[in-house]
Image (tube, rainbow, N blue to C red; front, side, top):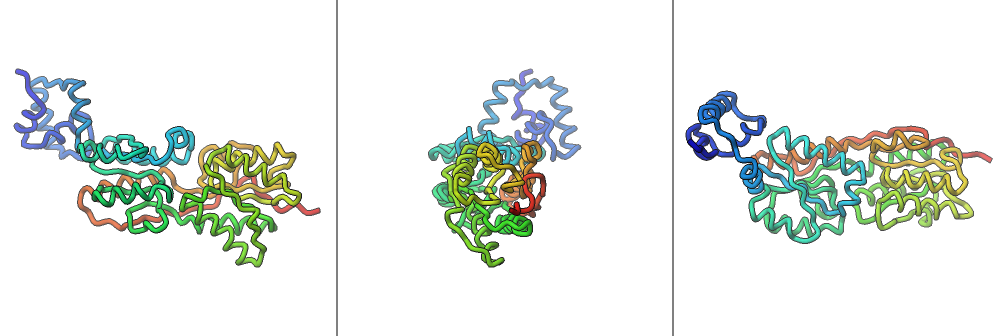
Length: 337
């Protein structure tokens, strides 16, 4: 007898989704229900057609979309983003959901939602230039959780860190080491970068130190190359900075190389601090002082919050995670003459 997954679901008194979860050995199925379904599968020697199974999953209500508003090349070459995505994927897998990658080049992601191929989205670290995505999702009442906040969009549900606090940790560390000419490099379209940049100015004012706008550079991207180029530009000045605070570790790696290529030593001549604490931070030479933010946990939390929204559970509109300054070999006392 050829039996369908729908017939097994009917005889077991459950939904087809529950049968699918048992077939895929997913958690959160009552043991007695699992046993009943397995008994029927064994009785009828049910073998799901692999192709049909794949097709049915495309329209499954157990899919979550990871909405990526950046170029794939940039996201997958940045260890911070891959850690966030690892967290999202792990949480969804443990809760029996499937992950679908969606790119926000246009509104195709809304087609995916309207076709019921996903139940909602985790939005990966949007910037201020992505406000149209937020507005579209809100207008269509699409469930979503962002892995960062956006200025003037703080009523949306998001997971983030206190970027200002993280920036203050960096500046207090550098000022305590005697640095007075401290540069900042960061992409201005990201709220996180803006808040870190503001902490640079606030800390200088707090300690009565002059703010020099020529020491604040805002490249168009947050890449290794942009960090390299910006640092090289700073080191060509007749009075270069003695310390550079970069908005992320990827740029900081490029900055260290540029400083060394310019004939300066890190940290003897110039201290460098990044932000994120990606795995590479421990392996550059010298090892990178940085602010550790829990990227993996951020991804897991965002996925968990979205599932709770789908389950109609009350949740806070935001979760703010702790940061920590990790002091390594790239920072040291200001050089005295």
